[in-house]
Length: 207
Image 1 (spheres, rainbow, N blue to C red):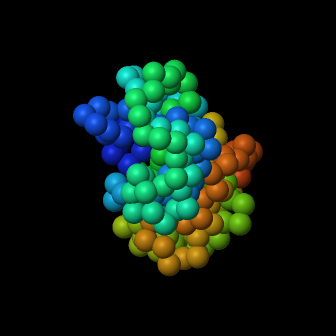
Image 2 (cartoon, helix red, strand yellow):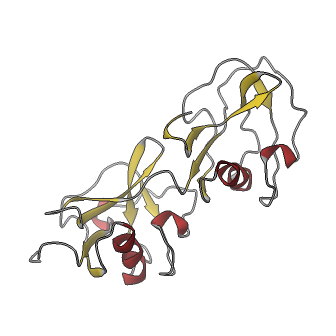
């Protein structure tokens, strides 16, 4: 709920006729992985808590969820008893799954070149060029149906981004950028290090 798509937002579960939230104590990527799998939303990218997607209403259904990550459903995970707890919603758990949103290239001459941004929930974040190379770039160009990567430029070539930045590492055989390794911790990168891409399906840009 409240994340902009069915694959990101505040986690709500149905129990004995009621929808309720999950208290975010001990909530982590292993727990979110099970939820994303159960929803058919790919891999877990982030496991925010502290009502990151806004506070829910009604009951809190459970807390202290401890999944191994290989369970088929959230109910199979170890947790406190499922019940209807009249607790505050200040620590509601959320999930962001890899099927949430496709990346975008902005401030370039067309949709196949520009500064790389990825949407997490309701926020677009830039990608830090730490360990970034043409293998990573090819994943993005392919996902956007923009051919192959032609160039990875220095930051600020198409205007610097703002806000938070992510570190992403791909092997080159992933189908989408969010199938790559994305640490849950956001990086406060200097935006001169924002990834800038030019794919082969774009107009020629002089450097």
